[in-house]
Image 1 (cartoon, rainbow, N blue to C red):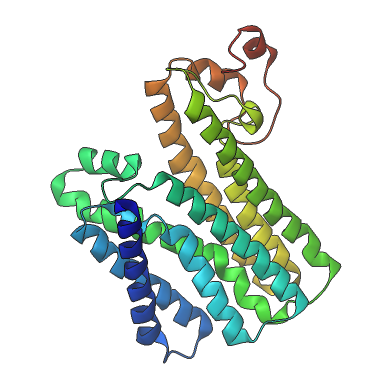
Image 2: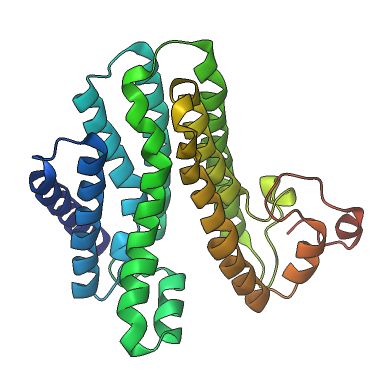
Amino acid sequence: MKKTRDLMILLGVYVLAFVASFFACIWIKSTILKFFLFDVIATIIVYIFSVLFHNSSVYDAYWSVTPLVMILWLFIVEKAWSIPHIIFLAVFLLWAIRLTKNWMEVFTDFSYEDWRYRKYREETPRHFWFFVNFFGIHMVPTLIVFAGMLPLFELAKLHLNWMILPGVLIMLFGISMEFFADRQMHEFLSSKKKGTVCNLGLWKYSRHPNYLGEISFWLGVFITMLPFSLSHWYYVIGFVLVAVLFNVVSIPLMEKRQLSRRPEYKEYQKVTSRLLLRPQKDSYEKSGMASV
């Protein structure tokens, strides 16, 4: 009951943020500027509620919910309802549902807050917490995801062409990677032994297959739209920023946490690829730690 109540409150916060942002920027003629301000204003509103609730995880679902809201609005603005548009929308919808559902399985109620946010709060001097919370946790991820969505502003040019196939397949590959990696991790966590390392399925070939899936998805978005936006090659900046975010921030944080909690992780690091899918080195298999 408490989880349901708090989820409904979060839904209300997001609806309020979207409606207020919509009316604040509906008068702007430039499509990109309109959507940019919509994203920024909605993020500010969500941030305000994260401060009121003393919980930065109020922002967590924003990562997956807002891009879907924006792409649906963009489809309406561009009147983009051809077969390739519907295919692309279906794949994007699949990504948003999977990511949001995965977050909902972790969320309990407002007593839950991502461990990274707690770590930042504990390690940041009080007078600097506003900057870390507002920019680092809320605004920077918003801007990175918006950059990843820049190719979508060429939707009007999208038409049925074999050239969209590679990008769509990469998007589906990324979604599948995340889905199976999450399932395998949940299976591990439900039956783990203290101190052991997840070495099931995809986790035998990459230490962060879920992050690889997310990076692949945004690469797919860029490649899908590339044939229709060759003059805007710089749209690749979105994919690059997503890759940098995971490689420079998310992965190092997770690696440090795993090393502090699981002594075996150091050996796992030596023989398992950091991100890309590669076979493990024989030494790990022979050590008797290959399965948990």
